[in-house]
Image 1 (cartoon, rainbow, N blue to C red):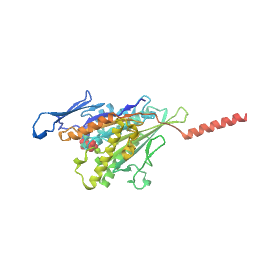
Image 2: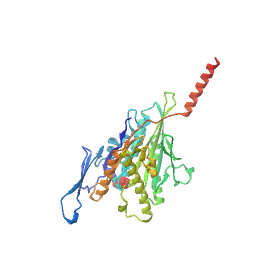
Image 3: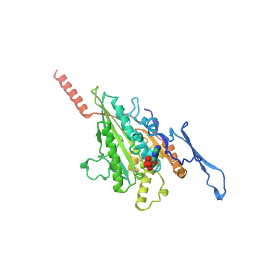
Image 4: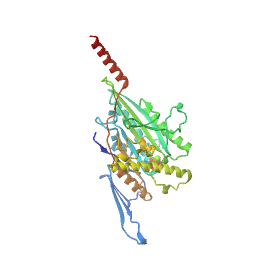
Length: 375
Ligand code: ADP
Ligand code: MG
């Protein structure tokens, strides 16, 4: 698959206080214009405005959950031989200030089927795609973690794993692939089991936030679907595997606005740091400085190494809250989203040889060779 830029959609949070003098949202051309009164110098009143124009892959204004999935996020699963079931990775992350709708977009709203977010819809779509491939034996596993203050917590630990708040470590394989050492990967045989594991992880996030006194806006929530596929018909040793990262990022608001102090200040500094590092990674990649990308500067950027500028089909949802009091944060989110569109990724198929099958193949070859020798 040719390299492709990170696909970016902007989603507005519906509001009765939409600042129509400030924001012009063009769904038809996928553009957003922001007009701001020019800060008057020396107290002179003027009618000048600063205006900014942005263009994205998609702009969804007051859109339903269904539209967001069908018109954008569904693409994550891919089609026609380059999908998740064919061994191609996917990542979808939500970025934006607290209150802009990231969790609503990724996880969903309260107990209403229509409000389900991208994660449960992705699970449903994945199992639908699996049902359409009876010729493959496909295994799905779900992992979930939370990153808070540079601490990475497994949200689905096995009961025997002990301290659930234990910090998890990231490891890299010889091909530069990244994984979390010892992360629980819950096998899900059906869509229901997979949704159940996800709901459990979401509930565990709430519990850990409560016990650590963390606001969800200050942690990153990462749900990963690991997919492994073997052919049932061809007896070869190929295993294609892939992973889908679904990420609800911490609030992107700047420190000055949070009015934090003490422990909260430490938190805000860490959270802002990991998002700042994410920004630095994106800046380095969008400037095509591929050899100086500071992936290892934080757990978040290290974990997403494959997903940003790597072997992945990547999509970002920039959530904005288009009210007058959020203009600055909105412009900052739109600027970051614009940068993100300049990052290109190259997704390649992940294939591995099944060691059991390989051993059997070599055993057959050895037996044949022995027979030849004996003749
Ligand atoms: P964030 O995770 O970015 O801090 P939330 O997803 O928690 O923001 O959204 C803040 C509030 O706004 C929640 O009560 C949520 O239900 C509501 N909300 C956000 N986006 C939408 C939307 N598109 N439609 C309806 N309600 C929304
Ligand atoms: Mg949230």
